[in-house]
Image (tube, rainbow, N blue to C red; front, side):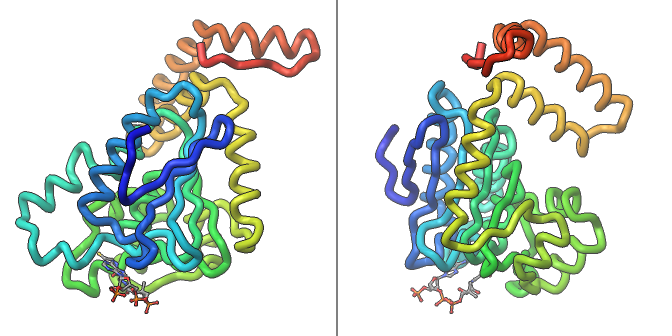
Length: 260
Ligand code: COA
C-alpha cells in the first residue's frame, strides 16, 4: 500500500481496517482525506487478500465530525461540487465491491454520517452521536445525506435529523435502524472483527453480487429488482466457489472459497 498522511491501513487476515487519522480535528474530512481515501479504496479494491473492509476514526472521541469546516470558506462552488461529485469518497465507498463495515467510535456527524451511510453495515459504541448538522451552518447535506439517510431510516426520521440538525444518541440510532449493533467501547473492535471475519470467509464473488442486488433494491422498482436478482443468481452459478460450496455441503466439510 502507498503511504498516506491522513489515513492508516492495517490488514488482519482477510480484513483491512482503514482509519481516518486526524484525531486532533476529530477526524474531520478535509481535501487530503477525500483524495487519500479514494486512492486507498482503489488499492484495496484490487487487493485479492482483502475480502472485507472496516472503516473507523482515530481516538476514542470521534468517528468523523463531518466535513472540515475550515475549508468551506476558501472553496469555490465548483471545487466543492468536484469533491462530492461522482468520484467522491462517498460514492467510491458505495460502489466498493467488497463488504464495508463502519465501526463508529464517537461523533458521527455530517459528512461522517454520510460516509457511514455509504458503508454496508454500521456498528457503534454507546457514546456515539449521529447528526446531519449542516442546517446549523446555513447549508445542507451534499454527500448523500438526504438520499441514503432517507432510504435507510425513512422520510420522517430523516427529515427530523436534517431539518433540526440535532444529534441523536446510539440508542435512538439503533431504534431508527441507522446502526445494526451497539457495543461497549472495550468490545467494539472485537465484535466488529468477529463479524468482518465471518463475512471474509464467504465466497467473495457471491458477496459482491449480494451487495449489488441489495443496493439495487432501493434504486429500482420491484419487478426490475427481482429481474436483476435472478440474473445475478444465474451469474453466481458460473463460479468455482459455487461448485466448492455445494460440494463442501454434500461432503459435510467446510468450504474453501477462492474468489473464482
Ligand atoms: N471541521 C473542522 N474542524 C473540526 C470539525 C469540523 N467539522 N469538528 C471539530 N473540529 C476541530 C475543532 O475546531 C477543534 O480544533 P482546535 O482544537 O484546533 O480548535 C478540534 O476539532 C476539537 O473539537 P472541539 O470543538 O474542541 O471539541 P468539542 O468536544 O468541544 O465539540 C463537536 C465536539 C463535534 C460537538 C464540535 O467539534 C462540533 O460541533 N464540530 C462540528 C460538527 C459539524 O458541524 N460537522 C458538520 C460539518 S458540515
